[in-house]
Length: 403
Image 1 (cartoon, rainbow, N blue to C red):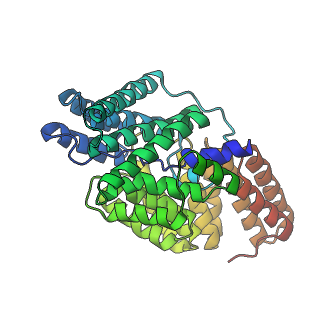
Image 2 (cartoon, rainbow, N blue to C red; image 1 turned 90 degrees about the vertical axis):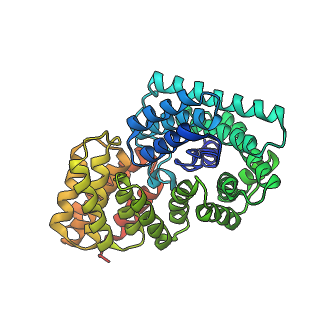
């Protein structure tokens, strides 16, 4: 099981936004404008409108692989959103297994994904047969199989199937860079996989090298940064990728700067304010976290669009955590109790109990604090949250004395 989980890190952690990647110049005229509009809607969490717009684009350009892939990508993101698996927290290694059985994807969305991703690859491969050095076709083939790799791992849980597709995605985009080194957009996929491989244990890295992946932590990050600075349609993708990688690397100020850029581009994406607050907490910038989460909760209160599974609990747990850091005890407890009141993942509930334990410690009630930490350990173990369990055990032994 340990290898399986580490393998999942190679493929499924390949960044939840990664494959919304249109190839420059792939579609023309009205179809391309509709495709680009669909991506903007998806970045703003308007999935229904994004899906309808992408289908309209596909009707106008049925033989364009980038648009067929776009239909598949929006369907995949919709599935992940419904499962609550689109946040940085889901890809920092905190949660290794769910405490609840995740529902199968809606049959219509799953069928749509398979149909259009297969069609995107067929179209790209036809172009490659006609011209093996067609740079755009290599790009599209790599993007299509990369999307399938992430779907296979994140939705279907098939690790080996995902590896096969991921390897081809990597190879196709390396070919793009070989044919034209100016195509920094292709560095997004190559750099991401290089980074992920570099974070694995030596046995997993060795296997990855044998089957064709390259490594290099700094090189991978640099390639993604170049994609983020490159004037192409993948700049936003690279920025979303960097939010995750900067958080993983402890480069929180860089992550906050990138989140700010994305907020300006996609103001309807309320989850960016949740990410800002979460990142600020990791950076121990509690005032900024409290402010960002309060603004985000105000947006949430008037947003009638669908929510992540347990989204309300996440917002209140995060703000409660920020307010524990600030020792706003009454406000923190109110938020943490709200986090426990509704539906949510057990790792969130466990961490909320740990924060309540901190409040009890601050109030001098060691017995109550220990009870809360014990609950946190139990819920964290149930939901596969080793860092949360370790933190709760340290608090159980040593208590919390504040900042």
